[in-house]
Image (cartoon, rainbow, N blue to C red; front, side):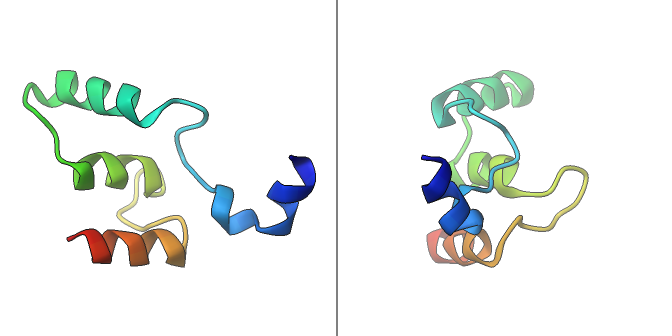
Length: 67
């Protein structure tokens, strides 16, 4: 797995560690006190902390396609 991660470092970039998408969604719903959208959770897990900038070009492209 170490070799795979090193081969394409951009594919493994997340700002949230090894927490599942469902867990992030649940936490965000509790924080916002309402159901969340896929886009909100994606933005939370793929933006640089404290900035409104995606962690990679690939993440930005996915976000644009989803909207």
